[in-house]
Amino acid sequence: MNSTFALYLFCILCLAMLSLPFIPAVNEWRAPKDCSPLPISRQYTNEVDYFTRQFRHDALADIAGQRDASKFDYVDGPPEQMRWMEGTRPLIGLTAVRSAAPVRCNRPLYLHADFDCGGNSSLTSVLSHGLLRLGTNGEILEWGHADGPITLDTGCVTLRRLSSNVRIELADRCCFERLSAPTIELGKKATTTPQKLDIHLPASFDDLPGAIRRTSTLTLIKGDCRLIDGCSYTGSLIVTGNLTIGHHTLVDGDVKARNAIQVGRSARVTGSLICEDRIELHDHVSVAGPLISETEIVLGSGTIIGSADAPTTISTDNLIALSGAVAHGTIWARKVGVVWEP
Image (cartoon, rainbow, N blue to C red; front, side, top):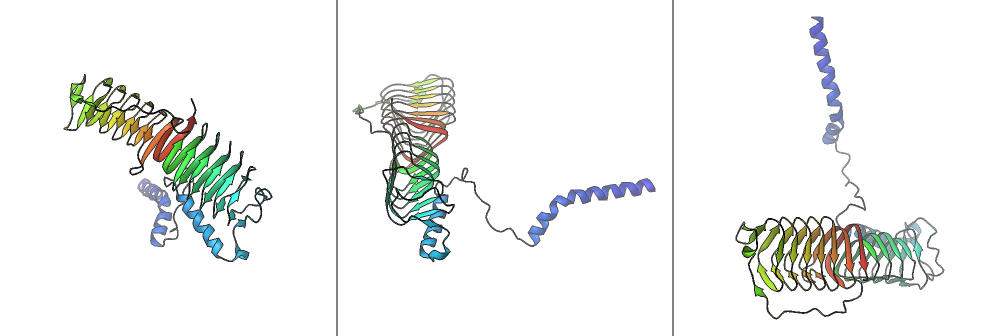
C-alpha cells in the first residue's frame, strides 16, 4: 500500500513539474499583456527601407511638434563649425548641408535636403530627402537612404544597407554589403562597345551530350556542359556539373548549375542564373535575373543585371564587380562586395 501511494505521489510530482513551463503561456492566453510587435534586428530585417520609414516618421513628427519637447538635436550652423560628435540624440538638418571638410557623426542624421560631405567622412546612419554624396574614403556604418541619387567616391565603405529611390553610383574600390535602387552603377561606365550579332544560329538543348528531356521546356544534363558560341537556345536548363555559356550565346529561359558557371562576353540569359558554386560573367553579359550563387559572383565590365522595367536580385557571399557593371534592383553580398578597377 505504501509503495502504491509513493508511486502515485511520484507521478503527481512529475506532472506538476512538467506543467510549470506552460503556466506563463496559459496566463498570457487568458489575459494577454504582451501585444506589441517584437523588435527586429537591424542586421536581419529583409525590408531594406524598414529603419528609413521609422526614422523619417519620428523626424517629421519632431519637426512638426514643439521644439522644447524635442527628442532630436538640430544642425544650427555651418557644417564646418558644427560639433557633430557631441551629444547623444539624433540630428536633424532642415537645409542642405555641403561641406568640403569631412563630417564625422556618431548618431543618426536626418537631412531635409541635400547632403554632400568631403573625404574621410564617417556616418552611423543617414537619411536624406535629396541627394547623398560621400567623398573619398568615407563610410556609413549602419544604413543610409536618399530620396535622390547616392554617390560614393573612391574607397568608400557601406557596412549594412544603402538604398535610393533613384540611383546609386559607386566609384572604384568601394566596398558594400547590400544595395537597393532602380539603377546601381558600379564603377566608371564601360568604355568598350559590345559586339552584336545580326543573327543567332538556332540550337537545341536536346543535341547536347548527356541531355535528358524532363518536360517540354526543361532539359537536364548530367556532367559538364558547354553551349556553343553565337547560338540561340530556348527553354530552361539544369546542369549537374560545370556550365560554360559561349560568347554571344542567347538562352531564352532559366539556367541552373551545380558547379561553376562561366558566361562568355556579350551572352544573354533572359531568365534566372543560379549556381551552387562560382558564377563569372564576362564583359557585356546581360542577365534578366535573379542572379544567385552560394559562394562568389564576378561581374564583368558592361554587364547588365535586370532592367529598369524589371528590377531583380543579385545574391551571393562575395561579389566582385569590375568597373562598368550595372544592376537594377537589389545586390546582397552577405560577406563582402567590392567594385574593382582592373
